[in-house]
Length: 250
Image 1 (tube, rainbow, N blue to C red):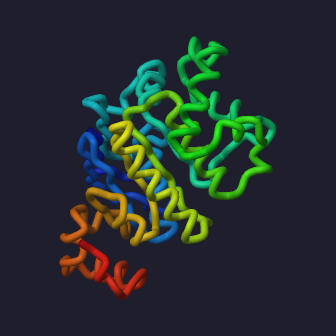
Image 2 (image 1 turned 60 degrees about the vertical axis):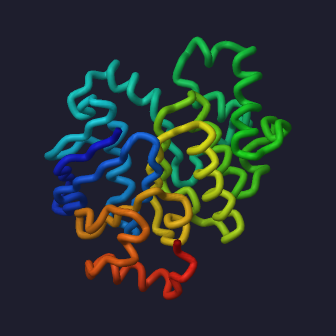
């Protein structure tokens, strides 16, 4: 379980998070919506301790993240897979080495036999062929690079997966592939997932619950039905901006 309690964060004079309360139950996939620049990625980076709050608390599996010592924080991060917005692959490494880099356990990282088994398994989970392991990132399409980024995030068999704009920059077909992948991994691996996105349609497709971050606060966190029926002016404006026809919704 992930809990953000009254989270505040500013950079200089810019207030980014202004009292955020946000909860993700075990086994859930929660989509975090919001305009570009509203602090969605900032919120995500607080969960695994990449950023520290000015005020407030982050609790993951009962552990208070801001107060963790270096070793404790390292242990927590080993249970959290992070999918960066642009894949963040190392251009000088082939796909095999990029995925291998996702292993935080040094014994496993240094085990050639384990890596020879684990890397193809990670590629299978993201629907890529084993021979992709030999390629460099420059030889891959944008959608494939995104999937390799996901493969690296799951290499260490995490309990949690954090996705930072996984469909950003992709055409609709590849965006659908990534959305389906988020759902597939949640079902096959049983991971708890948080997906930062500005794509309402994708969020509605994959998430058990949805949250909207605006003006430094969570305007609403609830089910798809609760979003569609909400009278909150921020929620209504965001939905109306992104799509007019919600008849596809369940």
